[in-house]
Image (cartoon, rainbow, N blue to C red; front, side):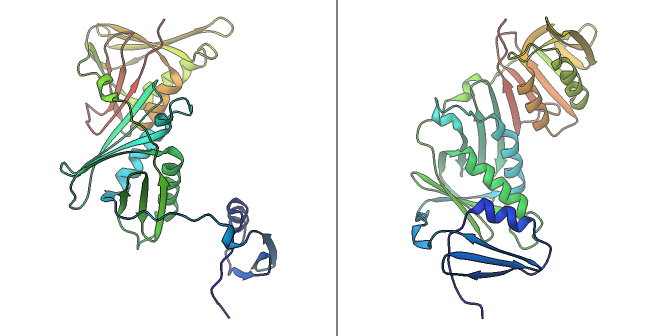
Length: 316
């Protein structure tokens, strides 16, 4: 007879095991010091710990709540999380910056490692007031994306996720799943001051053609530097990409594009550039350049304002 019970078991072990089971009924039986799992002809016992040894999870209550549409939120995380810093030297940069503006019904999601930056704007759902700024650990948001992916096909799930923010915690509630986390203390850098307001050169180019050219040139970039030079030639409407390595050789390729403004040249880390290109979801992209020393800007389409990606050039 079914009855309530509780036990603590290794999450990765049980997840890996259950994923390998056939699509049949699974019976769980709590023994004295193990959990029995029976499915068809498969039988196993997984050792664990008493539930009393599981750490208490503090409830997130009394905070400010916001309602965020799931689809654009998931897309925003996919376009920014890869830019989070992996260095613990600047703790604030190891998380994603979420800025909620209830009055404008706007959520800004941003991430940077000081070498590149991704920022996306989302329109909030429902009625809400006030503003909140929070830095959420990247691992928490990566897990949230995994939850979105697992539950995406369920017809009963809401189209929005509720976010509740307190002084040092954040909770994401989606259907019957709640994910809570501590936030990262500190002040996120004022990255908006590096976003170029004007440009010397503006290029509109096919994203896939440009990305393939970057990949070919990258094969000849210098090890450890990952450099690819990009030259805009308005007179011939060409974007020339080149790379040279003393050991492997050199490569030059040009692609056609619409170019406005002056001739320009910049050297970029090709890995950062490809990350940004993969994050853009339009066939055409707009590139904005100032010079070899200032931020290189990518936006979707012909100047979309929902998403932008910035790369700091490699100074020669």
